[in-house]
Length: 390
Ligand SMILES: Cc1ncc(COP(=O)(O)O)c(C=O)c1O
Image 1 (spheres, rainbow, N blue to C red):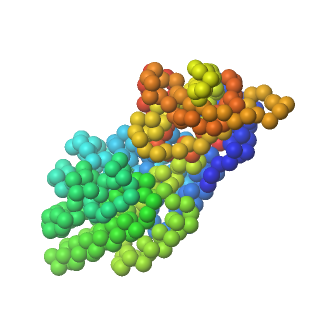
Image 2 (cartoon, protein in one colour):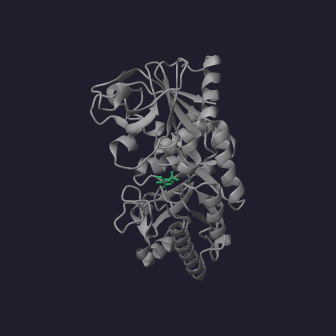
Image 3 (tube, rainbow, N blue to C red):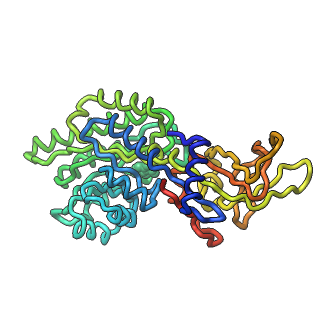
């Protein structure tokens, strides 16, 4: 659900009037209604038994996590630290999915001792021997289904030499391990983020479901009663409601899919549009009449790590809230929007057209809910922005 300029202004004005936002630098707003809207799409679109474990790495603010847990959703942890964040949010162990590719022996043991019922997806066959016998949680195995996808070099993790998952070409090895480690009850995959085309995900689900079916048949033949009962299909899809519905329509038609309980791990889809940032405009500087003016705000490469440190095309639309009214219509001008950090590359936007900006105005940046605050860099030791969950 997109947050409009009017709605953002209303949230901001309300927070100021109620005295819950006092920073003279930058404030991150996160809308509970927008979060509920996205969560409801998942709940109403997927088969009823699906467990949606929302990716903590995408937005790890404790208030947001607590709300997700209170709504009955699960959480996906990419590190042991995120398992602890999930616990602090009040979640039941059986709604945590722990996916780190570098779980230590000690972390696995702590899950065994302290979090009975938790699901750990092993990233490699080599990880399986680290689990105690009669492991107290559930064990999944991450498969790399080797499908082409549109995620690009930065996000595509389904490549031949990916660090994630066991390549599906090691089929016999996977089957042998699933016969040896009878308690493996889930197959997991995640092919990458920023996907614009849903067909590789459908292809991946088909491949992994067929593999799970084959493992179950082989287990039955060997008198092993444990089955692969769950498919964890990861996240990676950044769709609107209609395309998510189309995706699920294709998903439920995959042969044998009804035999498995599904888990999803969406991040971007849930969080991206729920948040906006308001920064005080500290200075507006003109270096030469023929150059764009420079607008200094209080967030840059510290909050927008992916945008500033990569050549990914990430857009954060922005608008200006002027501090003083103007009698005549304001002109549009070209601006470079720069952050507060001490290096030349700390530029958020170049040559963008905005209505004339002055010191003391507020710059609103939208669609800032995913992979921003959770990636806060701490460069120049600046304080993390105030957070309003509204
Ligand atoms: C294993 C796993 N699950 C889920 C996600 C969330 O992906 P997205 O935010 O693209 O939905 C990621 C992202 O990196 C991931 O690595």
